[in-house]
Length: 112
Image (tube, rainbow, N blue to C red; front, top):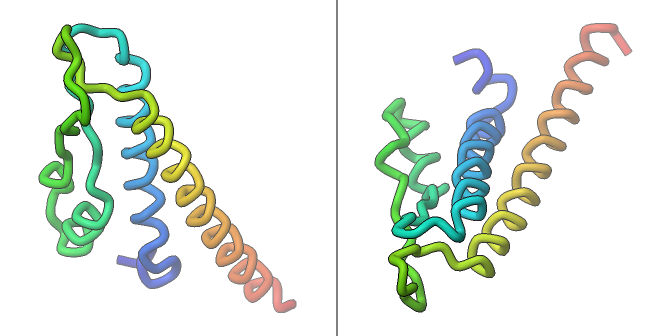
């Protein structure tokens, strides 16, 4: 793949981080929905699967709550918010790397 040669794993990582961000946001949005089951993406497992060219669906797991809810909802806001913040930081790091790489390639093409 051309993008992997240019950008390494960061392009794939950015896509997976984005997917995880949507999943975590969905968990937070459904914190009050009875019987909602919180899900998360095992990032390391998803990255391994993506590198092998396999579907990353096998890396999606249901979160096991520390304390059970009476309505069957497994969302724990502190856990979700922490995971969201951690994922956002990793997303920004991958994005910064890609921006730097694109800047380097642009300067090389311009002959600077």
